[in-house]
Amino acid sequence: MSDTGGPANAPTDVVVLTGMSGAGRSTAANVLEDLGWYVVDNLPPQMILPMAELAEHSRGGVSQLAVVVDVRSRTFFTALREALQTLRSRGWKPNVVFVDATDEALVRRFESVRRPHPLQGHGRLLDGITRERTLLGDLRSEADILIDTSGLNVHQLSAKVSQVFAIEGGPRLRLAVMSFGFKYGIPLDADLVFDMRFLPNPFWVPELRSQTGKDAPVADYVMSQPGAKEFVDRVVDLMDPVVLGYLREGRRYVTLAVGCTGGKHRSVAVAEALAARLSSDEVATILVHRDLGRE
Image 1 (cartoon, rainbow, N blue to C red):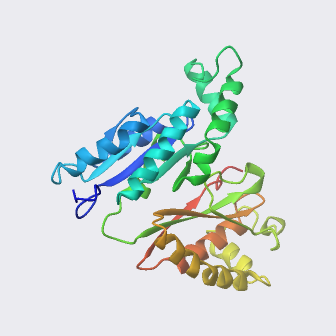
Image 2 (image 1 turned 90 degrees about the horizontal axis):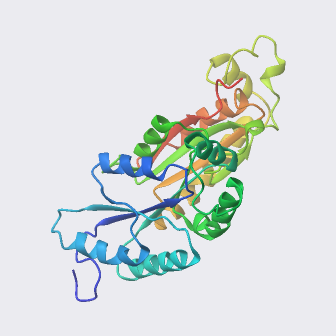
């Protein structure tokens, strides 16, 4: 460590994993451990800096440190913000990963294991979720990576966390291009959202109704509509300065969501086209069709 109190050369990678109770923090932590990260669970925020310093003194023994922080009080929240500010002032670049899910999904999970919410007290389960969501609102908005686990099982969540962290020495930014259906809700973890409902719906073409945007006839139909190719061109141009900005800010994972009514035709076709165009040496695109097959 240098005389200024920060990392001497290549600093230890530091991830702070937090989020809503029941959203999948433990699963995400297990995946990071499997990927070779040194994971410390339930670490008080005040101990993050000493832990990072110990990792830095390990002479390469700990090159990737992940701390799981359970923020259940305003005092913990304040301490976490102060710890992150101190880390940044001393040369580390901690990534805050926030796992979240809809209230409906969280209620369902707590009821399935018959456990009360940690902030529920004598109130309802939903009261505890609401208190925690209010407490964590600012932290969620400031997170570097937001992972929506609402519609994911354990295996799907594990795959998503692996996509975020497993790539080493390759592209500096992972861009998830996600198609979705508005009738199933906008993805919680979307950084950019585009609406494809300005294009004619192939659902009303009998021979295309049963196919999806991954099928050539549907893709050709969607992309031949007035404004479709122009839209893709404009989004690709728009993403040039956005990607450069994300790289400057140290963002590692970004989600671009493309929606239509049901997430079967238009959004799928456009997401496929965007993913192909946006992939580069700097950007690895990950194609996700969230709602394909739900109808």
